[in-house]
Amino acid sequence: AVTEFQIGLEDVVATVNGEAVTGDEVLTSYERVVNYYGEPDTDSLELYYAVAMEEAITLKLIDLTAAEIGVDEFTQEELDELYETSDSEWEYALENYVSYNFDITDETTEEELAAAYAEAEEYYGLMGYSKDILRESYVDNEVFERVKAELCKDVTVTDDEVQAYYDEAVADDKDIYEFDVDAYENQLLMYQYGYADQEPWYKPEGYRYIKHILLEVDETLMDEYTDLLARYEEQMDAEDTEEDADTEEDADTDTQEDLVTAEDVDAAKAAIIASVQDTIDEINQKIAEGVSFDELMAEYGTDPGMTSGSYPDGYEVSLASYGYVTEFVSAAFSVDEIGEISEPVISDYGVHIVQYAGDVPAGPVELTDDLKSVITENLLDDKNNTVLNEWYDTADIQYTGIIRSVQQISEDEEAEDAEVVE
Image (cartoon, rainbow, N blue to C red):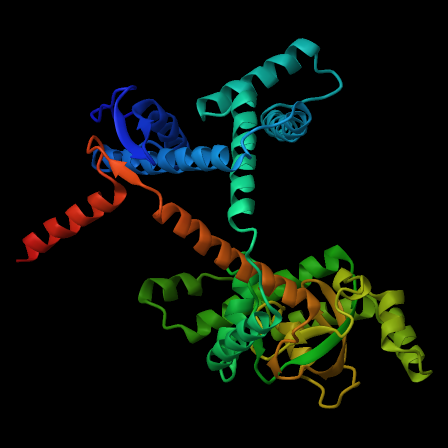
């Protein structure tokens, strides 16, 4: 650990509304900063302490405000409820550590189990966590939530504000996605993997509702087909690539038996179709008899997305869709009329029988009650943050100079950079 920056426990680093913030309080916050960001190097050490000081100042302001408005006291029942929640989280963390790092079986002795849990406690202890510390953090968080609730008690969101938020978001997304399906697909992918908070609120043209019956096939047949297809595609890529002399010499040593032909791939594909042909014939017969595609999906399909009812209208698919295998997308656009059903196609998932179920209307997403709730929460968060920022900004915070503030460090660095440029 870096130790060049020294601070005394009794040193007053700042005052908040006349109340001292001490070095001891900063050091407590500093440990949390280190646990979150890792040990600092020499260049970032003072910044770590500055961040810790700002946290200690905020905690002091919360405590002072809580006492002032009378929300800092807890009944034993309230504490017991908080402790029950925090203790449950603590036990869950210990159990996760033990299950991940130890092979616990029915044969594990009580002594071995106790040793495993002791190691888990030691591990979290080195990270600055313990059962008591977690309890304290739950109490501190509850104090803050009480302060926030009191400060923000008059914050409201009107229907007009919700509508205005929606209209602005739709207009912004229309500018981005109306003529750019690729950008729309990228945003969907970002949302799917948790890198974006919201799906686009404007849908471009070119999407179809697609339903399908997915038939599982024999694993050996599928493995043989995918292996042959991969090798064949690799050969085709190699033929299209200009090889250097050494590579060409190596290619001459390949035996004819190593090569995969289009006929080999077609034969493997035919074997898969043949393995489910009886089922395909049954489905086609029932379609001819007027049985609905939805009924057939429920009877024969193995894709949970279709059989669970999560997508009652079908998947939304465009030619640019990234979230579906290419064979599925191709099948989705192999037919021209709504209600038409494609020929069976094969992907890594099995055999697909695809129906063009309808067109997805281009334009804004619907302002549903669920979306209104999301917008209301977003607006409340923004307004609450404004109130909390004003509360902090109007506090009388004075620095003693023992530790530079984050703002002072930033200003000094900007001044130094300016001098270098000059």
